[in-house]
Amino acid sequence: MSGKPNPTALADKLISLTNEGKLDWNEDPNDNDAPWVKVGDLFIVLREGRNAHGANLFRISLETDSEEVIDSFTDEELDAETSTDYYFKQLDLLFSKARRAASGADKALLQVLKGLDDLG
Image (cartoon, rainbow, N blue to C red):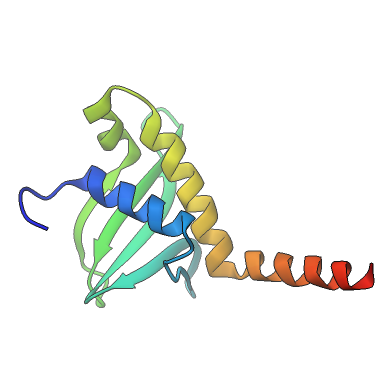
C-alpha cells in the first residue's frame, strides 16, 4: 500500500475484517471497555467516550506496546470528511462486535445454541 495515510481506509479495513471474523480482538485486563488487536508491532485500540456535547464518541488509536499513542482519530473526524454519520454508525457496530469477540460472548452464545440444538 502506498500513498497518503488514510484513517478512513483503516476504519473500513477494521470493519471489514471484523465482520469476516479475521481479527483476534482482546480485552484489556485494566479496561474491558477498550478492545484491542495487535497488528505488526502496533496495537489498535477501540474506545468509547463522549464528545463536548455529551454524545457518544468512538476513537481508534494506534499504540505501541508501552501504550504510547502514535495516532488517534474519532468517528466525528471521519464523518467530517464525508458530511454524514456513516462512521459513527459503523464504529458503534465495530466497537460492539469487538467487545463481544474479546469477551468471548460470541463463542459462549454459539456453544449454548449448539447445546440446545443437540437437545432437539
